[in-house]
Image 1 (tube, rainbow, N blue to C red):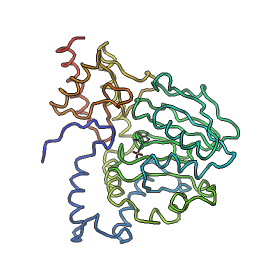
Image 2 (cartoon, protein in one colour; image 1 turned 60 degrees about the vertical axis):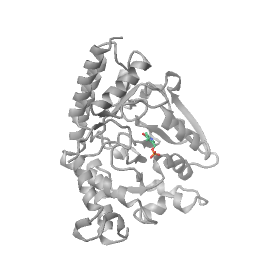
Image 3 (cartoon, rainbow, N blue to C red; image 1 turned 90 degrees about the vertical axis):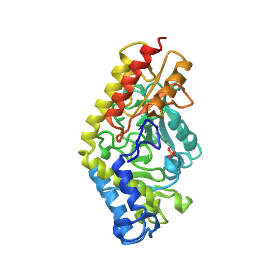
Length: 361
Ligand SMILES: *Cc1c(COP(=O)(O)O)cnc(C)c1O
C-alpha cells in the first residue's frame, strides 16, 4: 500500500483507508457483476439497494424518526442556503438566523431573496470566535424557523447545546454531522454536504420532517421542491451515484467503530489532546473562545505569520498535510473529523512541541 500522510484538510477531507480500498475495487467491478459501480443504471436493483442501504444505515446511526425523509441531493450544501427559504418562506414571511460564520452569512444573503430575515445574534465583530448562549437571542413569534450552523468549519466554533425553540429548527451540519449524538426529533431540517464528515463530494444529505414538504409555494421549480425528491426516493433524476455509494461505505465503517456515541467519545479525546497542547503555553493561540470550541476544526495561530508559514511547510515535510488556515482568518487549522486517526493528532502535538523549542518567539 502507498504511504499515506495525515490529512488535516477541511473538506474534501480524509476518509477511512478501507473505504477507499473497497471503492477502488467496486468502481471497476461491483459485486463480481463485471460492471463498475459508476457504470450501472441508477434504477438497477443493485444500485437501488446501495441507496436504500445508505439511507437505512443513516436512519439507524442517527436514530431518525419515521416521520422524516432522507434526501440525497446535488448542488452542495450551498444550494440549501436558497432551497430552504425558497420552500419555506415567501412574501411577508420571516425567518430567524444566528450569524456565527461565513456559512451562516451566505445563508442569510440567500434567505433575504425570499422573505424577511431577522438576524438574532451575530459574532461577526469578534471574527466569529464564539457561538451564542441560549439567553443571548430570542426568536420572533412570527418567525417560520430558526436557522443555525452547528459547527463553524472556518472559525472552529460549535454549538455545545442545540438551540431550544418552539419554531421549526433548521441546521447546517455539514462539518459535524455524525460526530456527536443529537436528537433529530428536535429539528425540522438537518442538512450536510458529504465531503467533510460523511464521504466524497457530490451529494448533500437533507433530513426533513414530513409536514415541511407541504409548505412549498406553487411557483417553485420542480427540481428545487423538496417534495419532488421525497416522493421519488431521491430518484426523480439521476442522483450522484458514486457519492451516495461512498456515504454508504463510510456509514458501514462508522457502525463498525461502534456508531455515533463511540465516535463522539473518540472525537472528544482527539480534540482534547490538541487543545491541551494549545492551552499549555503562550506560543500557540486558539481562535475560538473556550466555551465555543469545536471538536472538528481547530484553528490556531503562532506568534507571527512568518512562523505560521514555516510551521505549515515543515509539518508537510513530515507527513502532516493540509494545516493552512482559511484565507479569511489565516494561521493554521487542524480539521480532525470522524475518520481522522488519533495517532495523527498525537503526531501533530509532538511536532508542535518540537517546532516551538526550535523556533522560540
Ligand atoms: C463546507 C461547508 C459548506 C459548503 O458546502 P458545499 O457543499 O461546498 O456547498 C456549507 N456549510 C458548512 C458548515 C460547511 O462547512
